[in-house]
Length: 248
View 1 (tube, rainbow, N blue to C red):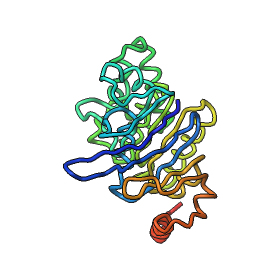
View 2: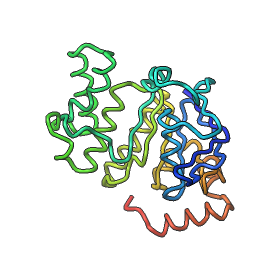
View 3: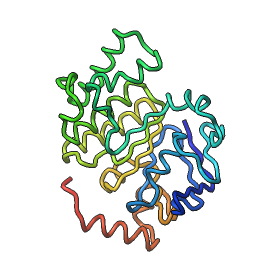
């Protein structure tokens, strides 16, 4: 699955968040999007899913412009894409198992016996096999993030959009999540978009890095090339992130 974004603009209550943003997300590759808080990274992810529609510009998926698709037209596309929000976006009224089974049940993709097998398998991969009956409210932030990842994986997506996948997760588990993201890309060719502040994750994972500043892409390239950028906004971002440090 490939995405092409062209000249995207988006405002909220007069706040012009995206200002002519364009980028290409290659099929089967890992694309990392960097930028300061509030620069529009999560807004971009929501446009890739069709959750938001641009004020102007376009989003293409596999050559089809989805910008003006209806909810009905978007449904078969969304089923192919996993979106993992920073907070997990789990339903507290459902157990961990029920949250992970929701998509398969709602779209009637598998019989109940197979749903149970798939959900248990994904939760065990993420070290949550003993938490099937827990409510999300009883879990730590890191655990909720891993449940959200398991939920996305149950759908066998062709693309996964990750919003800060390692935020709030201890360094050893963060490294395991990085390894899982890379393994899925290498083994099954899933297209991956990662929004992150974690430079270790970004440079370990990325095939291509994009940097957003004031709603536009101001720098892009493979990790080694990106690190050598002379763009003042990129240099300042890297300096600040490295000054903060990282336990990994």
